[in-house]
Image (cartoon, each protein chain N blue to C red):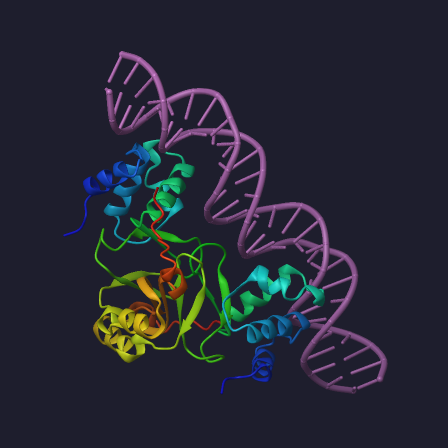
Length: 152
Length: 152
DNA sequence: TGGCAAATTGCAAATAATTTGCAAATCTAT
DNA sequence: ATAGATTTGCAAATTATTTGCAATTTGCCA
């Protein structure tokens, strides 16, 4: 189980931040659509709610500094946002270079290989988090024989 | 051994692209400064060369589609560019959340753990490349007792 | 519950980062 | 050297995100 909206609400309060309609709405969208969303997409999912795009950006920025949300840049276009570790399962991404499709992978070679500990021991750098994304061809694009290296 | 500028020149020619001053200059900067650079920084390093920022962007875009350069987004600010795998050693980044310092790590848990093969076998997704960045506190920031979770 | 102070929002304007149109300049292959 | 295709410079256009400020919302407490 992960921390719920209720937990986040308390967390915000404890730090002097208000629990507002905009913030609750943004978090709800992120919880409801478990995949990296662009600010624009989140805003669109809120069209009925009367919430300004600026507020979406402001909410995302706040959540990011509080480590509730993390920003990921996958392939082309604007960055995307998703709930951070602790608010959903630790995972990585599989991004298809051809169709842009994004899938999650929960296997984590970083933890499995104890890389953080190894790095800390060898360099003194204290690893707190990591981002791992894998690019390539998804099954259907591969079957379709699509090539990524468009060059002619 | 890695592919040299000469190789790249031939590669471009083979695809109908010209070997121009701007392109050569951008590649030289990337080769000379082996760390992720912003478009702006590359341009600045070329100030004497009379090369327009637009051309830097155009060169980077071309190199990116040809997999000669890869774009990485580390922490805040504009994305950075560095030579891609095949043109320099495969590596990952250690990014200090406090001072922004970037170091390289050549240990790769993804290859070591044979994650690509595992994924391909299990999901049919053919992994071609990956990006792994680790965030935390570098040795000096840690000694200085700096905290990252700035919250009030 | 009402009221106040502090925090947040909406909106429009400001920035920042990157892209594009097009004529002039450069490059490759004769 | 020359022709023809590609690229560059420059300025203007886009795209993504941030900001100022008055109006509104929220948290807290009598």
